[in-house]
Image (tube, rainbow, N blue to C red; front, side, top):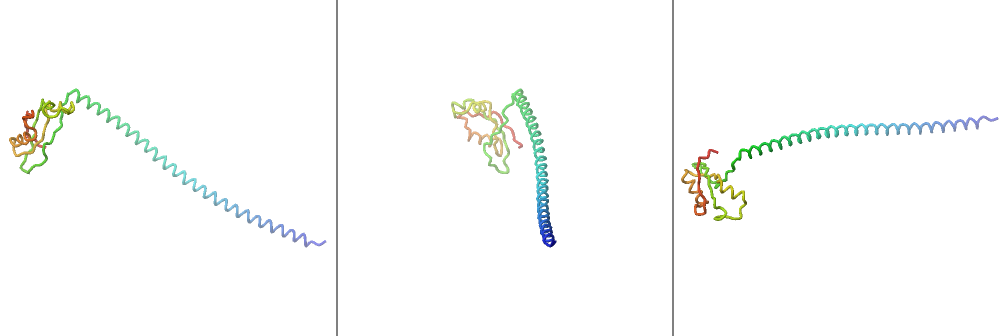
Amino acid sequence: MDAMPYVFAGLVGFASLAVSLLLALRRLKTSEERIATAVSRKQAQVERIKKIARVTLRQAHDLREARRRKAMAELGCEDLEQRLKAADAADRRVYVLDDRRTQQDEGWLLRVVNIEYASRVNANLTTAALDSWKRGRRILVWALDEKKAREKVHTRLPENKGFTIMGVESYLG
């Protein structure tokens, strides 16, 4: 018998096995690369999630702190409002008659009252504004002396309309 066909068949089988083995090794290498890429992407994603979690936890802490500060501020406001009501605090607003002034001018605070504001000037004013005219408004005027300050106020708020100056004091603001 001739052994040549068997040797040839064995060589073809060996060559097929070698080619299959090479292809399998190539696929294995490709799979290992894909797995390595997936692992690195997974690790990067985990790091991003951890970073976002740290930021979220910090924001939650900041939110709790802000809510606590807000609650404390609200309590403080309520306390202040209660103390103001208890003291029946007067209106502390200062109305500026005219902000034009020279370097020689001094500031003067004049308390101006108009009990008949609604009937003599403007009946459509709100109740709070009418009350402020009845109690007296503090008006800041810039003038050389008290006499000039009174003249400026009487020019803008004349006596014939019911405006009366109840007090004058020097303003050091």
